[in-house]
Length: 181
Image 1 (cartoon, helix red, strand yellow):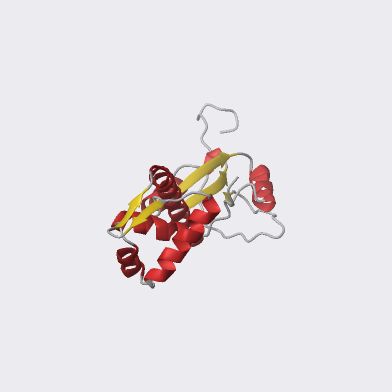
Image 2 (spheres, rainbow, N blue to C red; image 1 turned 45 degrees about the vertical axis):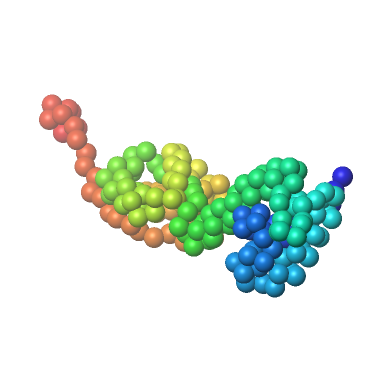
């Protein structure tokens, strides 16, 4: 079995060489000496145990195996690049997911508007809402199951920060015919 501990730069050099059909043109695009590109492609071929390119005086041509390998490898390289971009966006808070605990009775009004504004401002962040009791949501925030929780009342949450976001008036409504009215 070939040694698959590949350096991604070696793979990139081979992909660019195939795209441009020349070690010299690949070196110009990559901004490195032609000998570096040629040597790294040779090392990649050695690790794979097969030639990617046929070399001749007029230039290079992909072998059938090289064409198949680089087609698959280029797709993988794009996947790695996409994953790195997504990780960078998540690190900057521009993508990813946010797990939010909330109590059904407070999920409308101000909180609904706040979440709608958040979705508009950060469309790449998926909001995952978990409806439960205040106690369960606090426990979820403490354990890390939730990123944050909206709770009513005066939360007693050790090792957590809490902040009052809004205050609502609460009304009691009953029939005027009720005995307690």
